[in-house]
Image (tube, rainbow, N blue to C red; front, side):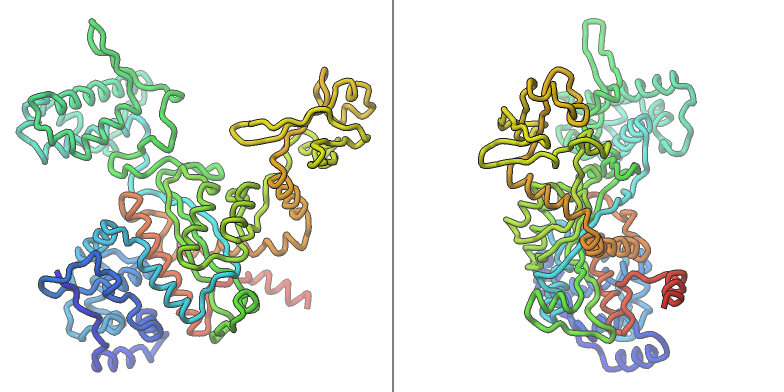
Length: 573
């Protein structure tokens, strides 16, 4: 289908929409059309949409509808209804007042095309490009990043439920794809009673022994079905069905089978024998979802990393040498510059470099990047400065030695390190006798030892080491990393640095807004790619909401002061 170009706003539509809008707050959709024009040009989506056939809806129009859909947290059906009846959307899309709109399924087809052609980031790229041209986002300033959990659009299942539901889903797929073959391969009547109802529609046995017995029944039935699918007389294409592939993977991860002369013996894997969480499937329907843990909370799904600008006008002017355009109420709003979606097992530190690559691709690298300690390490602080020219403003883990934890005795900082002479000096003036590169827990390190004959008679030995026979031992990182680490730890004790680091806290408000406005905490779709697409559209929606508030002189991107805090400030004045 050939996409039609963006139409201009019909005169009657503009007249009626503006007359209605004059009686209340100016609608977001109309403001976006007035300020940004045809934001999502048709040519930008040419790769995913054909150039021949009868005219269809413009991908640029559908992109704007989807963004506004997330701004109001609407379903596809509700979004199509708004296009059909909402004058503000008809104005934004350039439609006649009597335009009937489109069927809700068009939005699903549009998202599928974007994912198939790798265009998940397109709408955010186009918005940021338009904002860069207007001077509202720039490289070289300050940004902040944080992550939060995202629940997959599937049920949380224990191992028993997971096995039963996976086998049930596979049988459903086979019953649709090859009903005649399935009728001859299994006992349909018996298996229909066992696997017909979904696992959440009935309660499993309360007895542990009966639950174990049920798990083994699932295991034997699953292996029997896999054997039938892979039999020589079975159609070869059956084993290529996604549901069959999921069943095979799930059974490898959860069961052992031993074939002897007496027959096949099936056993469940013990917890310690399960594959690592990054590989283990958590649902037969969303094979990208994983079990995650953060700050003591378990969930099944994904993790999202949000980066946003956090400059004041003076900061932007100093970084770029250009004047920053001021809105009705001060400097531009905080705008989301990057969205990264991963499965739930990916740590924050693993995403520090990819986030900077994403910002570099948009030419939006900051001079200072405010992060929490989960994103930082000495290697990353050094690496981001060398490779991207970005200073990470982040706390680092403190010294974990027994002396440092206890707050008494001589920790590593009490020793003087002479890197050139490869020697350390203890607080009493004695020097080390051993300096050797090593590898500790897979990372490069330097091990320094003091002679036991020197340490044994030392009067402060109890405050220095807990080793009975030997002398004091120090473990350091390579020089550049250790010096960066020592400097960062020293900075963290400074009140001025802590006040500056308070800038990072604003990202919590952004996460709250994303969850409250767009429902970002819960995935709408299955799979990592479509979930990331959802997050990108949510980010664009939040940016437009913030820009709309700024254009109207009511920015929402600042952390609001509570009424109690206002009272306290007024009393202090």
